[in-house]
Length: 418
Image (cartoon, rainbow, N blue to C red; front, side):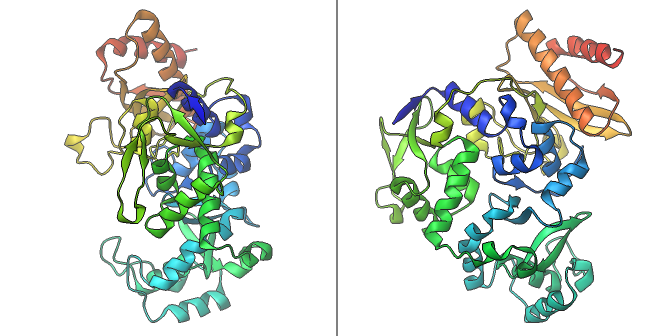
């Protein structure tokens, strides 16, 4: 068993996620997608949609065209499916989701009852595809967003069970086609067991996260019940290829005695996390990225993990009433020097990036040197974000930390007039 300090674990995690070292940017978009394992999708668009922000945070202003082509290209290199949430996934992961497709097929229900028209929709895709929901009668019945039409329910269930697949989008609309037309035959022919699927996905989660607790791995793969037990088996048997580690300061291990009954007890001195063995072979070195992070970025998408690694409590406030928001509608944590130093709630007006609110974390040093470093990092992060969306000017509306207000505005003014 390997013992790690919390700082060592954090640096391994940052390198695994593409935020530390020059090699993290090697290989461009395709390599980035395989490095992180899954890129979460979301409908919110502030500076750009989250799946773009994830790429920009690691690679800089590569441009929307490159991002879109890497995710949704012809021939396809990725597909959309359910991992941590709705995600873009490397195409080679298709066989590993067989366990989930089989489970959906057996249940014949997820959010809605499957309508009797499903066979007609499949025949339509077979004869007319690829299609969007507009081609099959529209997505909604006219009510709220969850009031789906029968055709939308049918096509989404066909996606769930793997009869159709989404490998590209038009605008924000999924394009559905038969799996047999877009998934390479060698991948379609693979039929791993449920245990092999879960072990393979656990291995991907472990490599992408670098160092992770069991709970982190479960959150990444979103397995539960019998599938969570398969994850445990894959860890303990070595099938997932991860090795046990003990990270100082992380919660103690939990012995899952009588796991089917859910009983757990603390195990003092036992390993409390798992790591990709390749990540332990060399010490993480190199330059840290300075960048804002999408709230849906896999570095911080799990709140307990984010607090454990960075000591920061972070939540998306887009669905919080405006008068109860603390950090802003789409507050983006700012990563600098391997730490989260603050948050910015961004907007865009033409070619001006607007920071509606900027705040610095309590852990940032208030010494003269500490303030100076934090101000420089925040300035650079805002400048970086502006470059992603071709903004040439910056404007800050509110700074919640009074001692940083004047110096940050001065730094931004100097940058704007440089």
